[in-house]
Amino acid sequence: MLCRQDGNHPSLMAISLMNTLQILFIAGFFWFTCVSSTAGQAEVPTSNAQLSLPISGVVERYPPYDDFCRRHPEECDLSGANVVAFSDDLVHELHKVNLAVNMEIRFAVDANQYGTEEYWALPSSGYGDCEDLALEKRSRLAASGLPRGALRLAIVFHKRHLNSHCVLTVETSRGTYILDSYTNSVCRWDKTPYNYEVRERADGQWDRFDQSDWRYDD
Image (cartoon, rainbow, N blue to C red; front, side, top):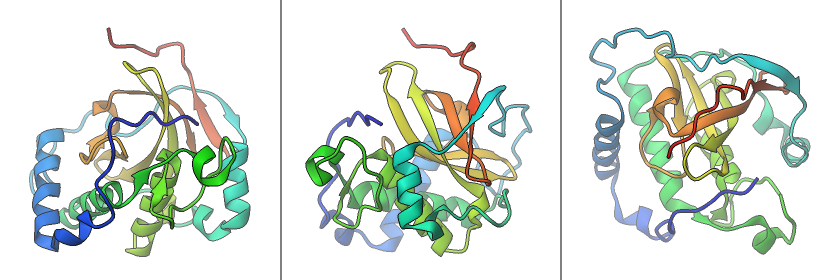
């Protein structure tokens, strides 16, 4: 997986300069820039709130991810509820974790860190690529009490930059939301600049979405 990086993340010291209130303030700002309502306001239901696309097939885990799951089976346990209730507390937690991980972890390609083309890992070194950040976000959200069944990885393809990328999807009662290492915003899946290629299932396999209707930006 090649994760194109648009600039460097701040240093590991940056997060220590922000207190919790500052983080939640910034998180709230990014929430309003991405969606038009918060948990305290009623959203108009839409047919595409959930990530539900035509499926062309089911595939096995990508080998580097399968290797990660053998090393860390607890991190790939997707048991529990597959939908989490949308609430103010959830909004704050998603933004807090997305922002913190994006600030703490600096981008590094696997070849430089591990001497191999592709190696999925929790970024304990303070460096990682898009898959590593997505795994770290899931780990933190699960530790905060969110059910792992609602926290599933997805591989996407940027409509303009034409690169593959890994994001974390969070299945909520008001739709599927995306935690992304390219942005501190937390957006609903259909508000992101991506075509969706595959997403993992609770049984460890991945749904491959039909690519015949992919769209690209000029």
